[in-house]
Length: 259
Image 1 (cartoon, one colour):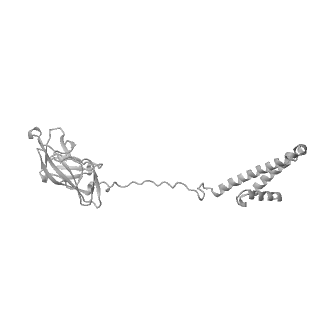
Image 2 (cartoon, helix red, strand yellow; image 1 turned 120 degrees about the horizontal axis):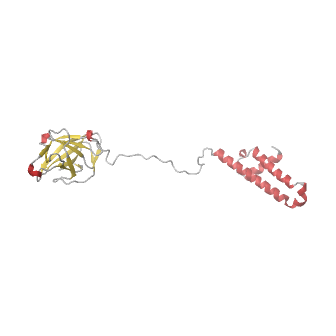
Image 3 (cartoon, one colour; image 1 turned 180 degrees about the horizontal axis):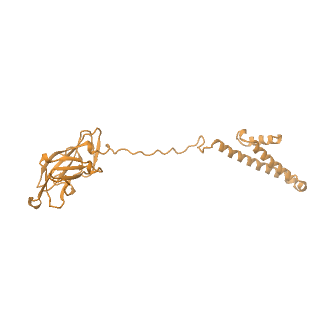
């Protein structure tokens, strides 16, 4: 670069904190040409007589404008070179990356699986021609699990291949319904629910004996049910009009043995 360009470069270094390596020779030459053109224009013979008084202010203005333009270019190019990836510069903060939400098992453990439960008759009885049984479900799995709400049941007689038609309602005559709740079953612990019918209708005629109950857990397909054989307990009698559904009451799952 020429001596005048070197002097201009030194001036630019004093006006901006950017390191000298950021102000290229092309930037200095561009500013130098702009200043020279402005001075030549002001010193033209046709303007000497009438422009002497304002020559210095115009030249100074041209210099300031050229310096400002060069500084702006240098700062812009410096920012692009220092931060090409768009990352936040040192000393600034940014929002932390979002963490994907993870699903957790329900409080008390995952839902119980039918294959890990064993059904049995804990107690049976009858009050005012309303027979009932207390069905126990024991957790034979390796971990705790939960039961929520009500079971779904299908009932069979000794001669039926298809489930008998029933109209299920909540609660029985002898066992009030505790209402839907979450029951946590530890290993080898019990939950229970009641099943009740009536034999008082039609003077004791058209009685059907339920000898098997298939128990389906909430949300599980019926084919994955738990089989409960009532034959060795004498079955559970109910009045059943031919071709019509007969009422059967059930209660929600509860902890313990129902005593």
